[in-house]
Image 1 (cartoon, rainbow, N blue to C red):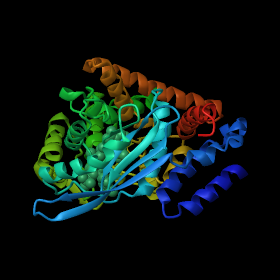
Image 2 (cartoon, rainbow, N blue to C red):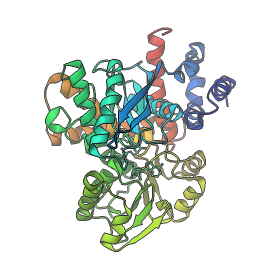
Image 3 (cartoon, rainbow, N blue to C red):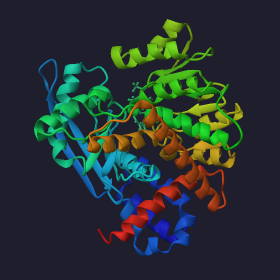
Image 4 (cartoon, rainbow, N blue to C red):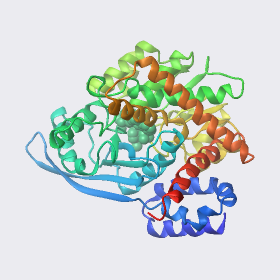
Length: 446
Ligand code: NDP
């Protein structure tokens, strides 16, 4: 590793030693952009590497609320505004008990390069809370969201910072957050994306991350004269990204056979078809139940506490959370003949797994490229809001496909330019980094 990169890594490790996923995300990016930094000494002269890992602003706040038993509860709220070099801060809100500033800094860091890859003018941010919506009533979720927004509203806005959903923040939560924002600000503006289609949301936004990860898989396979038709696919998670990945896989003639949640996974060798998926969507979005119920309903296997990577498949779509594919999982996937991994989740593969995918030259789409469809359509939601106009479904879907194609082209052409044509990690990282770094240099020491 270049001495200058090593020095920055040492400083980050010393400052953030209690934030292992943040360090992991930086390490992955900085290792792979080394050839670009060697070609462009200005990045060292302007100390871009050290500036890039220091968030422009971090907001941490108390979120008190009253539960259905009348008890006063308190959680911690966060917004990390990491980089605004190419546009307003943009990135989702995560509500999950594991949330802390290290996880959100890693997500905001990834988001910054992902947003640059979409070609839309969006900076990088992320936020959320250690609040767990699971097991809470709708009323409790509403009270929490209102309290959360009562502080967050002063930090966001359509030209400042535009949050969206992530784990634990779906259509219901965005509705409650938007309602409170509108009430406090007395304005109807696009300060959040992922809104309902009847009140400013873009069509295809709910589908965009899963559809996008599937389009990205198709792009990678097409690049090798292959396609998704007939492919057996493992999918993890059963939330927003997993559901729409399964939907698009079915539409493109592939066969998704697994889904999971934090309790375990189900394996349906006959395929999770459209009808079964509709049942899953109702289970997760309306009844808010567990994926194990699928096994009972459709008489298939449920594997408690396990992840689906041991199931024989051609393609894998990790769509749950970070570090859900270990080095050992990757070895098993490859042994079973898996030829493609398209990451709907952010950083789902541990570093050892990433190394194996790159070494074996399989089609490997890292999250910041493969799951960029969600934020891309959020970017289009912002445009539609400021135009006071909404585009039809077909128009948005066409734009999503074009954007996924252009991200694939940018990542693969950049990878080829640096002599490793199949290494989309390197390609995506360099393409995203260069755009943000050049903008930072243009804007001086800010
Ligand atoms: P959801 O909350 O809708 O679904 C998350 C799913 O993953 C649930 O099935 C959940 O199970 C499971 N899960 C979450 N945490 C864990 C864990 N620690 N261990 C095992 N399973 C877990 O979230 P999304 O579908 O929106 O997000 C999934 C991933 O995609 C995340 O990595 C997110 O950052 C990424 N992403 C999402 C985008 C979006 O537009 N929504 C955009 C780009 C990336 P359970 O219910 O049991 O917790």
